[in-house]
Length: 103
Image 1 (cartoon, one colour):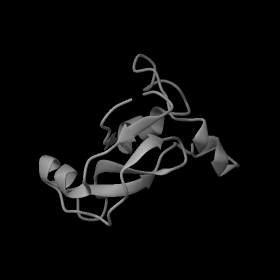
Image 2: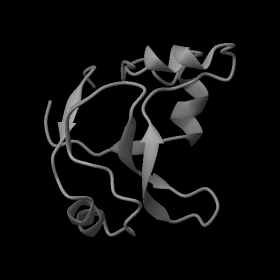
Image 3: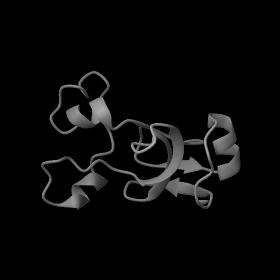
Image 4: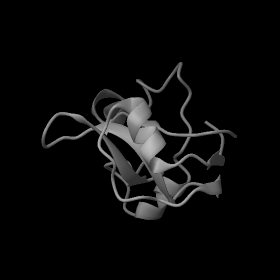
């Protein structure tokens, strides 16, 4: 995924399309970048159902001493994501779909 993208759909439309409940509404934005709150479809770990959630964009590896490293960890190559130490565990158990309207 690139370093920025746009989301200009209503939250209710997104929830209907993916068949999930509507979370607190985030405003439409045309310049989303790492470290911002973004909408994602994920499996809720508590109730084991899909949900639309507002999440912070970026991966903070378990070994990171500084959470700001998540601002730079936004891209992984599909060919090696399951092998690289930074992404390996998240690839196995922390997946989600970032909702985007365009790049």
